[in-house]
Amino acid sequence: MSWLPLDSVVVPIDFSDSSGDALKTAAQLVAQPGHIHVLHVLVPLDLVMPGSFAIAADEDHRLQTARDRLAAFVSEHRLVGCHLEVRLGDPGLDITDYAAEVKAGLIVIPSHGYHGVKRFLLGSVAERVLRHAHCDVLVLRRRDAE
Image 1: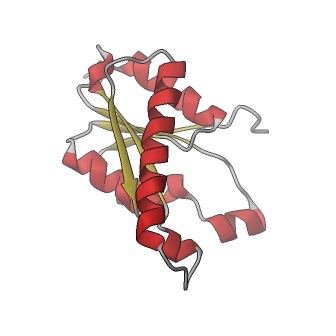
Image 2: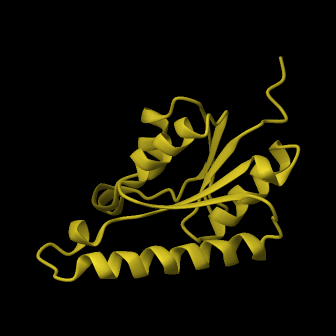
């Protein structure tokens, strides 16, 4: 049984080169760009900077800046007609929640391959997505992986 082409693929983006690779991979797995849902999740400022004031105004500005940057990123990769979404929250959980909302058949996510202390401090979004997703997940290997 073939699972290609897919009707709904979620591609989480963090604007890295690896995110561009994930977009290219997703484009190969669907019949048309309209089946691709490109998602960027911002971490709330109150989680990053506890005790900050005027966070609500900053969050609105961050969301709009992220929307503009996401549209430019997708355009640079010559994908027209994709669904674009920016959310504020926990990346690992918001990616899987969004995939469930759009009834995605697949999430295509790059792995940054952090190890040791960096992985402990930053966590692994791809790993959380793997644990919580209700659909298949394709984790792409880093270009510079050993």
